[in-house]
Image 1: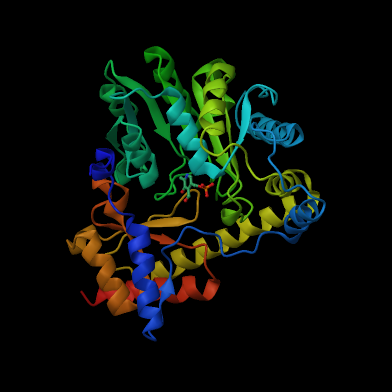
Image 2: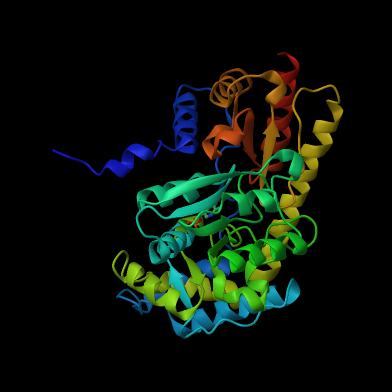
Length: 397
Ligand SMILES: Cc1ncc(COP(=O)(O)O)c(C=O)c1O
């Protein structure tokens, strides 16, 4: 019997491989500091849980509207509007026609790609980048074209590199700022230049902004914050990271009406609709005042942990490891290149010999070779002990 050949193009998830090994080691009684998973260690704020629980009790247990509840879409439009007015000159999205509630950020990205990609079309993706950005394109029979995002350039592809990668088959550029795994955040001028290229070559920009609330300097600029380029932008977001709601599986996509019409068909034929009680929890997340304070506290906590890592790293001033401060998201992309150890072996050894779980940089693209991703959405103690164990280990090499 034959299988879908596309799956031959998709590697097994390196994050899952590390997570499995961590579980095995723990089961064998070994103490492991798990800094591999990109999942906030906070509980979902209680108000959100209560709002969803009440809706569940009240009987919201049937199909919901396939675009999502209108009042949730209105709350999403208001959030995007607030954000783009703070960091650009965007205009509001129409909640009736330009927004759909999705089954998390992954599904938002899936319906975005599904809506625009024909077999053989190319999508430009920074390397390194979250693996699903590339894998989804392959699953949909497109061609993922990596564009190098070197650490020497703040992990941002040079604007000329984006442009020279464009061919007549290019359909989209995929961006994700703040970035997983590098924490990169571009400035206004960079985003403006990038969107200018998209307009010039008439291609889409899919902007995955799931980490938009997690940043350590200026608020990141949204691709939707440029009114004149809005017709080329597909905005993707999620409740997972900002509200510590990874298990709820809810997100959204916003874009021009024609695009959303396609995305709706993709969504109706893949998930039908997002569970209505989950939507009520999400609506509470966006509109409740106390929740906004709680997510601000989460950001401050991430900032404290980031500072702990930088402070400890500074003690190791002769270290072969370069600890590059991320501008956003909750990851360090640690540069182990001077050790000249392939990143898969490196992470295996750090797990076995230092007891810390990290993700091999190569899981994010060829440019990630020699790096490893550390997630600091973990307790202060784990972050403190984890970075010290890594730096000590590196000193012994
Ligand atoms: C860059 C990026 N986009 C999207 C997602 C997926 O988010 P969700 O849990 O909403 O599907 C992740 C999760 O790790 C991510 O890192």
